[in-house]
Length: 140
Image (cartoon, rainbow, N blue to C red):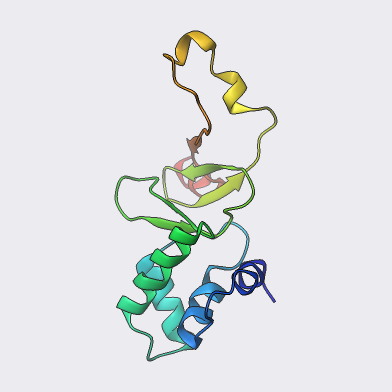
């Protein structure tokens, strides 16, 4: 059983066939799918699943704190099941591939006191941008 499915079962989330297939689609490393991509993959496994059901399940997962909702390009929201392990994102400016990364150090400690403007900072979201090996090879 996947990590996400285990967490959801532990929380008592009612596991209908539709919800289960959404959770299964989201399971894995470096998963950052749009709602439409989740729907397309879920429909391969469960053809009768509706787009509305997928959107509802994603919304519930975000509210539960089991999936992160992020936008790296200012357009489509993406859904990241890596909600319980602090990490940042590495985004390819060419193809849009997203990878989870855990660099050394603490980004909260890296923000100088003089740059906090009195904020009590509790969280940092860092996005690194560049070209993946495929796009860098195509550009060169």
